[in-house]
Length: 119
Figure: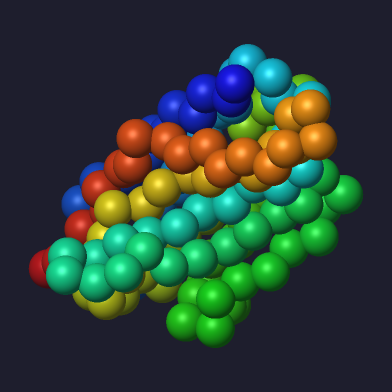
């Protein structure tokens, strides 16, 4: 089992910044990738950014150049730096971990943190 706890959401004005954190615990050595997804009201959950255990990253086109995903392996924590925020970035942001345990693949999710971009 892997547990994920997110923090860092909130209300910010357009053009502002936030940093989200996701701390992993439990069977962390089974994790091979972590990422952030978001779900706006009335829309499907979508991938925002992903980082592998080797440090490779990928981003949704809508956030490239504005958001940065990073990880601190010593703290078992993944971060998402959100810059130049737009109202359309408003959503609940979820941390995700992909793990392999006993040759089975699992998806783990955090509880979600609300990001609201509004003036």
